[in-house]
Length: 313
Image (tube, rainbow, N blue to C red; front, side):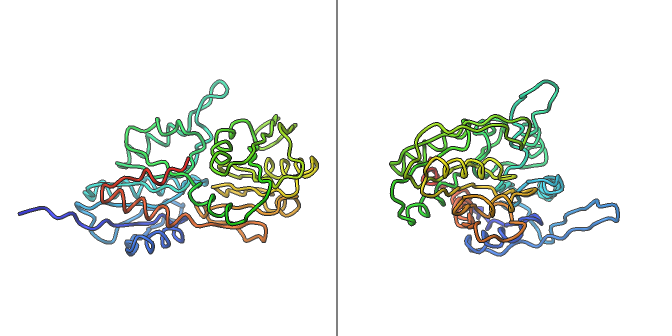
C-alpha cells in the first residue's frame, strides 16, 4: 500500500503568535493547537494538543531576548521529536544571539554557535531564518539552513517610492556587502559610515565615506536595536547635504530609547519587517510583513521544490 505524505502542521511560539497566524493563512492552513502549563515560579511546559506522528512540523518563533523565547522554541522542538514527528523545521524569522558569532575578546562565549547546537539537540531537522547577523552562522549547523533575505520584501517597496538620485548607505563597515548588493540591484551609488564604539550600543565617533549632497539616501541594516547608529548616521548625512534619509532594517528590536531617538532624528521613515512584534506604534516606523515569504518557502520545502528564486542577494 503506497505511503501518502500527510499535510504539514504549523505551530506558533507565544511571542510570534500574530506573525504565525499570518504565515499559516498565507500557507493555506490552520495553526495547530498547543497549550502551555505554567508553574508559579515561571517554569512552563508546552503541549501539542493533536497528533504530529509521522508529519512535517513547522514551529514558528523568533528567539530575541528574553531567553524565554529561545527556551520555548527548544521545548517545542523537543516535544515534537518525542511525539514522533517525521520532520521538524524551526522557522525563526529572527535568529537571536546572533551577534555573538565569534570571540571578539578573550574569555567570551560564541553564543550563536551554542544556540545552533541547542536547536539541533532539541530536535530541529531544518532551520528557516531571515537575514542572519553574520552569514557564517549557517556553518554552525549540521542540518540544512534556508537563509532568506528580506531584500525580496524591501526592494519592491523602495522601487515604488520612485526616488531620484538614490544612494544606498551602510551604517558601518560590516554592512558594506549588504549595501553593495542593494545598490547593484537598484543601480545606485554607495556610501559607508565608519564608526568607533566605546562599548556595545554606544558610538564614540562616526565619519562618512562618500558624497551624499543632493541625494535621497537609504540606510540598509539587518537589525535596529537602540537606533543609535541609524539616527546618528541619518543626522550626519542631512548635515552633509542629503535631501532625505530613510532606513530599512529587517529586525526591529527597538530597545531602550530607540523610539524616542527615531522620532527626534532626521530619518524620514524606518522600514522594518514583522519578524519581531513592535513594542509600540510610531508614525516614522513602517512595517512590511514577511508572512508571504515564509509561507511560500515553507510550501516549497514541504513539496521539495527549489527556493533559489527567493535569494535576490
